[in-house]
Image (cartoon, rainbow, N blue to C red; front, side, top):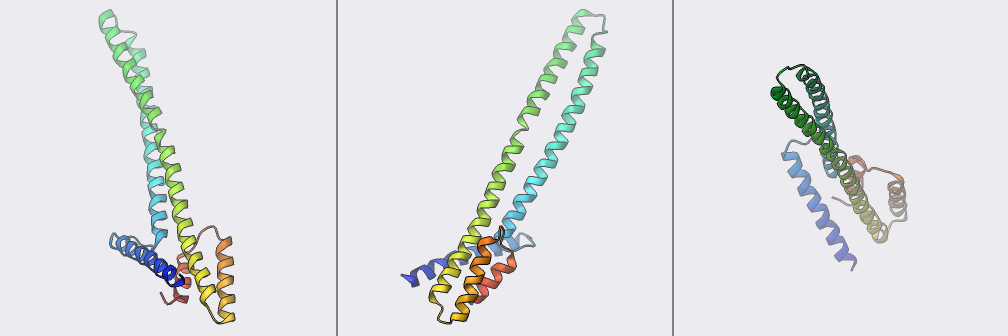
Amino acid sequence: MTEGLLQEVKKLLNIIETYKKDVESLGAKKEGLKSVNTHIELAIKESEEATKKLIDNIMSISQMLKNMLETASKVENEELKNKLRSDIEQALSKLTESLTLLEFQDIVSQRLLKISGFVTDLEKEILKILLLFGINEEKSETKKEELKEKLEELEWKKEVSQEDVDDILKQFGM
């Protein structure tokens, strides 16, 4: 039973290692699951910046159209005036609708943050399993105490650093 669990943990760690290599080949500077969070945070930031620019553009164009609407009211030709008003009002309506559709950015950011949290929790749980396994299998009381301290430290940390991951894996010869 214990041997099977160790094999499963090793398989999981191999999958993570493979992922790390794939990410490195894409030019990521950070290793492991941490790079996933880095990419997610970057996606959120870029999405927010693009949305802010779009909102600024929409507001600016809306103001220009309102000015055009005012100018159109001074046109003497009634047919032309009505056509201009109609077209400008439709454009304003489309811009308002576009502004409303940009609310998706906030929803996307929230979803990405949830994914980021899941990835962090997943990495932490894998390390906990490895530490628990080590505590169970270790013969040396000193080493068991070290592993228990690492486990307790891991429990209190919100995020796991790459240094923590490397340190724990090193203790298991990985």
